[in-house]
Amino acid sequence: MKIIVCKDYEEMSRKAVELVAESLRETPAGLVSFAGGETPLGAVHAFADQVNAGEIDISRAHYVSLDEWVGLSDTDEGSCGLFNRVELLGRLEKPFAGAHVINGAAANIEDERRALDAYIAQHGPLTASVLGIGMNGHLGFNEDGVDFESDAHIIPLSDVTKRVMTKYFGEKFHPEYGISQGLRQIMAAKRVILIANGAHKAEILRQAVRGEVTNRVPASILQQHPDCYVVADAAAGAGL
Ligand code: GLP
Image (cartoon, rainbow, N blue to C red; front, side):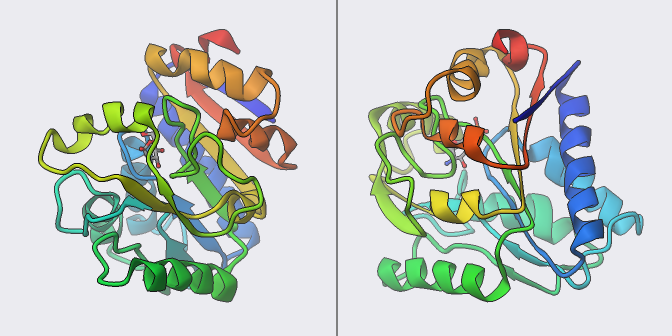
């Protein structure tokens, strides 16, 4: 793991985009993924700005979303789909060659899971995957206890995730499951960039980076990735 502790959120976001840009320069027809949630907002905006300025070429690259709350679509407040559509894809004046955003409200969620596997199989492996970390150490919806060998899957949300999720949509939705890229697909990414900001992430980030590799803290598997960057702001990086 290469650990980069930045002075603040802006620097963390900028650094993450620099690493994605470098990957895309090496593999212009690659496959890129950004997590949803609060952490990557600055990074996806900076990424879109640089694409629009002609500094990053995504004309041959594909995009795939990381995860979604089962039951939520890309029009639902707080969904990962809405984040992808509005904060990233909708900002791009020069689009990706193709994009796949998971629909958590699909009539047949098993078909949706298969479609995610198929998209990654067709356009992957991932060139650069930008991930956040959940308060229980999850990556996407690879919740604690997940199988490290998983591909795309549908998984019950942990109690910690259920407590935290109200920050995205209050009491409006009560999802019980998440749909997510699996750790096998994430670990197959050429480069993984784990970003974290804020003091509330310091302890779980420390466990993921310095603790033992265990599926009780799914992000700890990244210690075994050959090109993983951990990019944190000063508060989240305090325990590293
Ligand atoms: C969410 C998502 C993840 C995200 C993580 C951290 O529940 N499933 O993809 O990376 O938890 O979210 P945040 O950046 O809002 O703290």
